Image 1 (cartoon, rainbow, N blue to C red):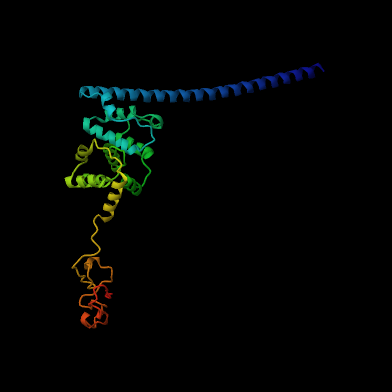
Image 2 (cartoon, helix red, strand yellow):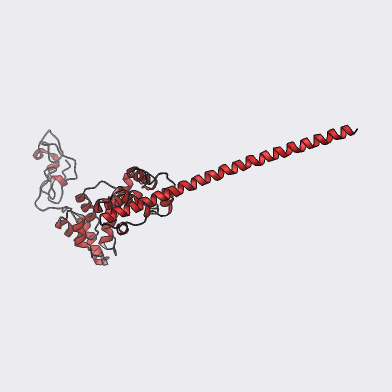
Length: 312
């Protein structure tokens, strides 16, 4: 009996020790998992610190290069606005490239300028990428334009460009700059751009004056109309302007002493004739090839000047 009690106590003790070992092993396993996760977080933090360090080095290097070239990067940054990812990124990158050409910035300087001008969504996008400070600048800008570039088709871009007109109460500088920005997304020559800008002027007198001056660049247009603000015409001027627009380029409907070669009627040229085209050598009156107009029955009332029976 004592032996049975002893055996039960031994079994209970062994079971307790086994459960204790199992619990200890489980705790150690969870502790190892926590250590692994903590290690991963430390690696990520180290990677972020490394990228930030590289970015700071790039900025410092660009600053040293700009100082050596006599150019202040902070001064150059005033020529471009901050970018938050809400507008067309392609045009913004084009502005960066223009600044690089103008001030002869190195790729490192341009990269630093690019990084320091990003805010909001654009800045989050930059910090989410790996090896940004070592990535090829063209590839970086290409990925940037894919993310923040315009989603409009070429047809929509063309329509928006052509739809932009000089509005009443607006300074010409604002209109011209907006037109140039829209044209930057299209492939237009300088002469063609000037024609579009002039065509968007609603005032006929100003438009004709600019056309006569034959400007060849947008700079010339800005010099001519930089301080001009388009005022809304009075009701009488609007009526006169509308009548001029309706009659602009049109020929009089009736011309005295003019006879049509197509239908032989008086009052218009053959180019303005609304009747079907007559084949050469056919009758003026009916278009028949069987006879001439002098033998045509439709020519019986040819002396009646108020009536015209020709229907060639």
